[in-house]
View 1 (cartoon, rainbow, N blue to C red):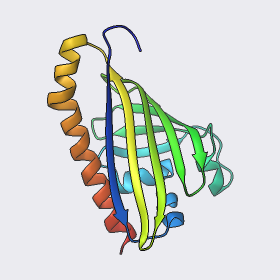
View 2: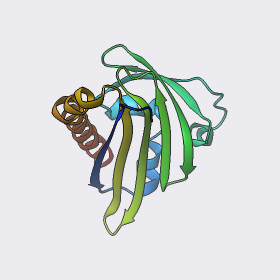
View 3: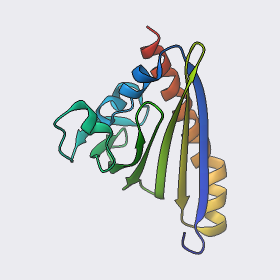
Length: 155
């Protein structure tokens, strides 16, 4: 982190009445546009020969957001049906973005937790902007996305 940057973290969890394997399938980059409030399109930039290739460390994609930004995203950690983490680059106003999904089997399905760590520049102004706008907008998008994912999987 550079001097004057502000770090932020967003965490959200949801209980989904579906097994971890079904939730895991929806975490592939090309499935995100089905349920994400932010992502509109996803194209793999790494080679995908098998379905498992979508989840391997090093798998990468170009994501087009609802704001028409193009974000490059790549998997940095993957443990099938349990955890997947990715790095996102090209998000306007944010840097060092790491997103993680953690899946935990429950008696009725899966607890899905999402954690996103990021940095924004700007010192005190960045801190004010983060607290008053960035975190609020991200939390709202995360809640809507997770609810949409839950609805899809529980049909």
